[in-house]
Image 1 (cartoon, helix red, strand yellow):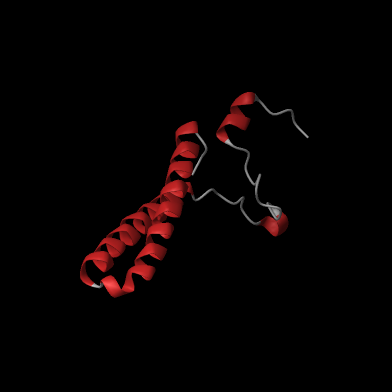
Image 2 (cartoon, helix red, strand yellow):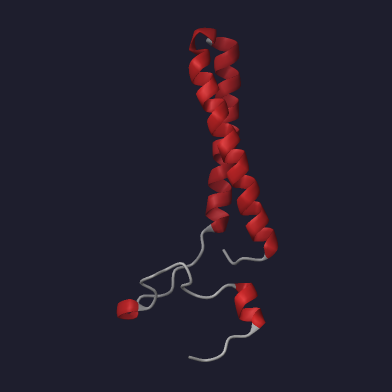
Amino acid sequence: MPKRSREEYERGLPGYHDPMAGVGGAPYARSALTLRLWLAGFGLVFCAGAAVVLFLVLPELAWFAWVLVALAVIAAVDFAWVAHRKWRGEPG
């Protein structure tokens, strides 16, 4: 096994999180951080907007609005974590 340079580790090793990497000629898995960032952003905007609409228009469904608020908080945390990983330089 060849010795890896620090740059390779900083860039991310191919197939690091893929236990089947290279088996049967399959290409290495690529990180989907950008897709995950977009999905977390969409979830945050959608859940927060839907919660506000439910609180204002249908107050009898306030319990569901609180569920959407909780999901919006989870999406915000995920968005922040993925943005941190991309800022740190992970590929994807």
